Image (cartoon, rainbow, N blue to C red; front, top):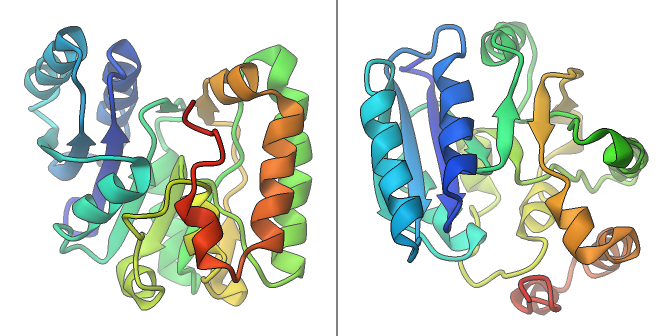
Length: 237
């Protein structure tokens, strides 16, 4: 997999969450030698220390390197510019690949399918799982209206297709994941069915379900309005 895949993770003060994310990557089948670029802007000494601990603890399998990041879009763009593999996986620091065969299974699928952008469903704390299942419906509808929505937490791109969209825009502060995935070809967009991708429900806990649903609706309405995505709309407050 090391010759096929580069993983890019934007990060800021993620501390133990990022360590766990990297540990789950370390446990993936066939992960030996895969390059992991952490686009980090941490200003918390504990988080920085944990990141360097992860580099040391997982160096036998993962080639982890740190670059300067920014907001997620800026960090992902910076990491993607360094990737020279056929595929790039954009992964968030709070995403845990609990199925150890997940990436191996996905690359087996890529051998026989014309897929340019792949994402997965997410599992989370029990009381929030229903919200994610409702989100799955929105995602399915996004394909039907030719405007695919792949959450930035797990976006596996064919590198050529990624750059065909223009790549992430560093000045986009809001829903940048939808902004770029909506430009992908829905014919080659795929949702890989799995229960092996877990994430924290913190976005819903912090912002509320109503806000997150309205985010999706507003993003779709403004999908052809670049200026909309350059404002943070109180998302980072």
